[in-house]
Amino acid sequence: MSATKKEMRLHEGELNVMELLWSNKVLAAKDISKIIKEYIGWEKNTTYTVIKRLIDKGAISREDPGFLCRARVTKKEVQEIETKALLSKLFNDSLTNFITEYLGNSRLTTEQIIELQRVLNRQI
Image 1: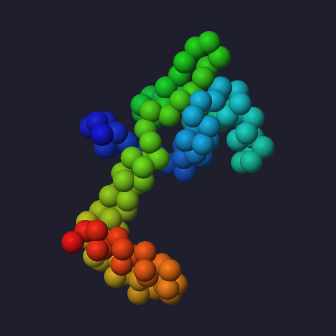
Image 2: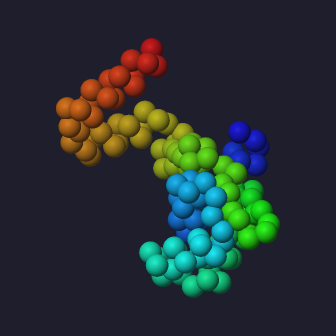
């Protein structure tokens, strides 16, 4: 992951556009605008402003003709960035503090516990 991607933070509106691109690989800006209008209610100018911001951040690329948009950062990369930011901001960079707090306030199913045990066993 490049240095710029490591620092790239996306807000909720930007994530809405990124989810469309992660699902569809390539979409014309006009199609993104139509979908966002239908599901979120944004006007065309709002969607185009968000697309431009994502282009400026390096999260998506624009291809002509047709103002085709393509994700330049993967969902996994964004999840890693946002997870690290969350841990830093709310849990003093401590995964243990996060897990302890989360599990202390949750009731896990047997399947979830087994899956967590599998993940932890891979770390050993």
